[in-house]
Length: 579
Image (cartoon, rainbow, N blue to C red; front, side, top):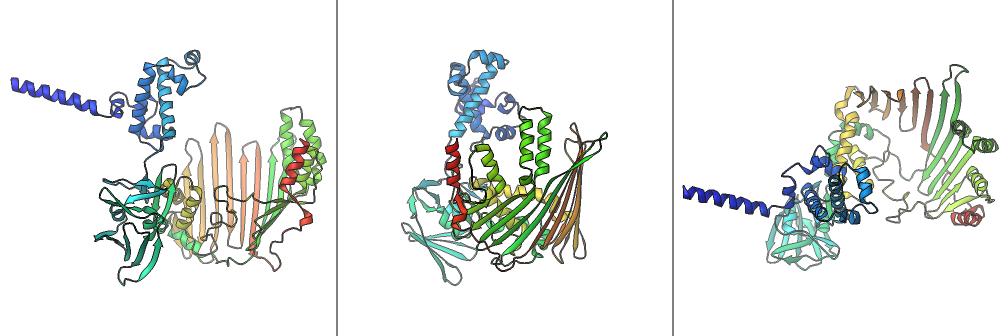
């Protein structure tokens, strides 16, 4: 009996000691989970809503508990660290209890900790964080250094060490290097032929029995794309081709249609023309319906290797007049002044024109718009030259890279539609690389998410085949409304054309709206008609026609002569002097 009692006492003592060594995060979860205390349905919901993107839920629990204990001991710290400018009178006014306020303050302090938190250096491969079992990645002279065997075997390579010579073989490619050397050799493992000798900007070294290498060079040697996510302190490695192929497996029909598009010569100067018309009908059962031409215009773009020109001519008076009428309904003091100005500007609004020229060699953008100049003169009291071109020298430069966005691959990827080789996978990956330059760690998942959304209406399962024509019939109920969306469209593999129609009806607290869309087109022409019918209120009809064809000789961009140009800095100086 005494022996059993001693065992129970020993067990209890062991449990007490064990609990004392557990992290604070465990203590936070022994009662009501933190996410429930904060009013969330799950830990994931709390993490997503509070944007705890660089830490995990246990970390948040630990920081929350630490801050709550700190505030419980000294509540005044809540006003010093979390709610500056508050006092207890405000707390008593806006909170049911001071305890609830302290919980919110502790969570706010945890979020501030997250903002200041610098995560350890890590590596992501194809969307998954690489786990290093012992030695961890580190940053040395702004280079991400990783244990070689761990990363090489994660990449699927076979590693071998022989008297200081280190090799890794993957898919027939062999990578050789030695400790302290500033080069690595990539060769054919079968023939031994050297493919490339790569200069390293960080030499491999040994630390605690592990060989460290700069991850970028070795990942790129095996065909991976490498990016650096500074916010997450993460080297992001991904197989761009494999990601695109994974996506493309779900879009074989659409990719066949893309392949049916005619291949454009990148050096060919192309002319794209558009005609847009917008009609607005206000329903009136007493005085009769009133239809207004809100917008009626044309656009012409000539795009070639030497630059780009654009000419927009549009009637904006109807749109401005409609705005003035709506403006006048609120009887604002300057409504009459606005109507008077519209009459003065009527001719310019009905014949508004915007011209643009961009020279590829100079990188300068030229704009000419008499209406804009007249508006500037009217509002500033400065006489600005209405017939001059305004030159902008750096308006198209990317603030991060300094590269002109019209010449960079970010805006004009090589896989652009019409140049051949475009697939849904390559387009989604290229788009993600452009959008996630500051958060590359999200890229892999965002491509997958975009593919999931697109597959709902363009995946292979949406189509039925009839000869060279593939037709998709789609229908879905809209969430949280008494409404639906139906659509049908056909892709023709014989000529790369498309045609279809869609209908969306929304019926909720704000009223009932019917939207209809019809479209048809091929590589040379497209026609789109959109109608938005708000029950018993209005009908808006939009028609758009696009055409594209090779531009005639002599259509290349010609920059204006110097005596026709005024710089944007000169215009800015005029306006500042007037002010």
